[in-house]
Image (cartoon, rainbow, N blue to C red; front, side, top):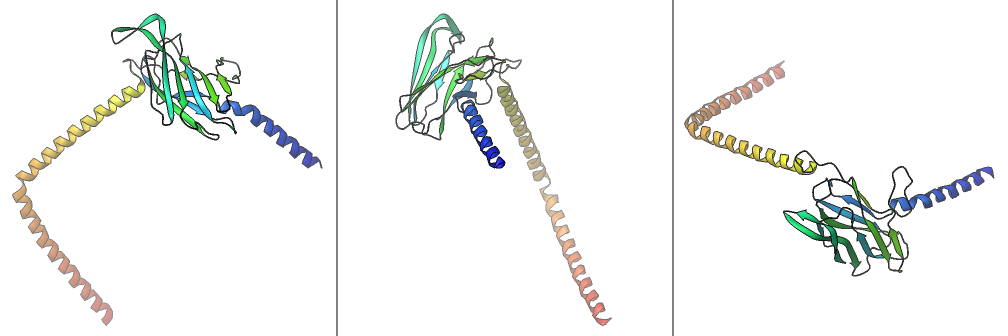
Length: 254
């Protein structure tokens, strides 16, 4: 009897822990593809899971930070979704490629053409952004998730360091430090790989040319050597066969 009570209590406790921890794993989030380095461009993806069993996610609205506005925001087309980019005037113009920009993207909205994100699934919404600020360690994107049941979940609570994660945390993009040349570490690695590949290609070309020249210069000697080696091989092979036959006869006689 005691064992069954303990088991029942354990099951209830486990269910309670699962119910409390589930929102932490199922909120709208943002992650970079590779690195999001300060002062550089990056492609980030907004991951939207469906938390409901009886409704689909049909709309996502992402508000872009106003304290660190981004001059370039380009969403990647997502099959089955319409996208709308909203721009707003800036209090302080930005300078990009030698030009002053007085407006920036303030919101991006994705609306499902069909069923949207059904229960048990998630969807990623990629966006190219830049240039990322050099005086910030992270960017906060507040998001609204709308279901087919008309329910709206507001992922707008900003997580605070040293405190527990809120029930509806806003997506936060962590920025990495730029390299000394002003590019991200990923870009520097790609450049180095390209240089190494080019050097290897040049070395291979030089080796091939050297080998071709050697073959042309020694063609006569190579032919003569090949013939001599062929004759020697035939003689050695015949001797081996003869030795094998004699050895077999000796064993039979013994």
